[in-house]
Image 1 (cartoon, helix red, strand yellow):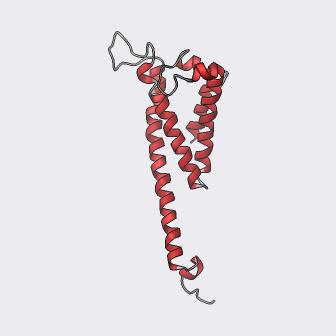
Image 2 (image 1 turned 180 degrees about the vertical axis):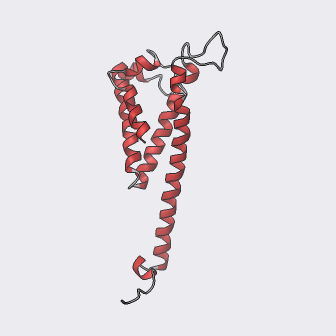
Image 3 (image 1 turned 90 degrees about the vertical axis):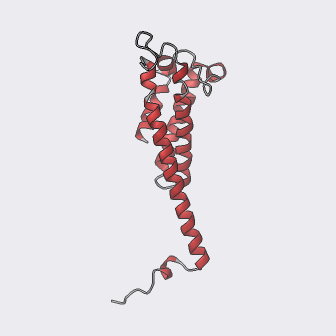
Length: 156
């Protein structure tokens, strides 16, 4: 969660995606950003969405649905940035061959780990939400409140 919040700064208007990702990312999820929003608008859109997802993840500690939305947003965000890797100009070292990366590809490799973490958080939040939903259903079926279901309390 903290990592997502700090990564929102990488697309801030001061730094901008131009400094990190080149002047025109050819990734399928991002090819439309610059023509539609321009460089500054794309920076604001990407940075703002990552800050929103980080806030949703934080809110997910108290609200399960917000955690699911935050994790889902992180998954989509990381899928988008991971798809930039194959299309990165001059991202692979020609002298060493294909697997040898350089420059911005090495910078974007962290998103592979963040993608796995996002899927893990999504799984955990869905399980947590489903478990609490099952517990609520069981309480309704029995028709007892939690106080009565606990059993008699010993008098002191």
